[in-house]
Image (tube, rainbow, N blue to C red; front, side, top):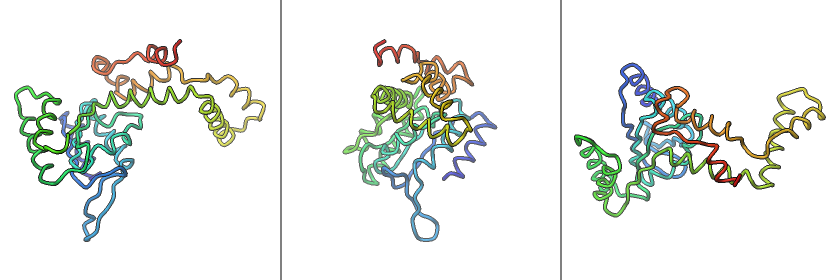
Length: 235
């Protein structure tokens, strides 16, 4: 699977095509499972997929749609939220275990509607859900997922216990990576801001959606992290 994704990446880089990546396998919270070629099965974790998907989406300038045609295909979506680049512009998949026949009907409808003259992804997914019947196919724009994850982390970072843990993590890193004295380390730690800065969060967001490489992406994904921090922190 990873080799196929890498081939698609190379082709997208050469031709500037924008593929739809269709992943079909047994799925769950840990990853995707399929035949290993020798009569057994093999697990590909969501974490192993993260970097290949980021590279493929990077080659499409953040236009990749991923269809996870697997039981509980949505289970691994949050595992893909690790940066620095978004793995897709949107992910589509069933929100619960689904029978193979229902999955077949739903995905056939998905690609039939994809051929519409002016396809709209939300309408396509709605049609696929109607064909799946007992299971809903979900559309998750990755910008929504990333926003929720960043705001959640910002809220957590406001807790005093979390701030102490953050300082301790940085202290251990300084001890391991530098030859500074204890006094110097404590001096630097005392100057750390208690919360992530809006500037740092803005850099992470812009890199995630490739605004740093393709400024035109700001029209689709632009977000003012200063305003977000002020809203969450109340300052």
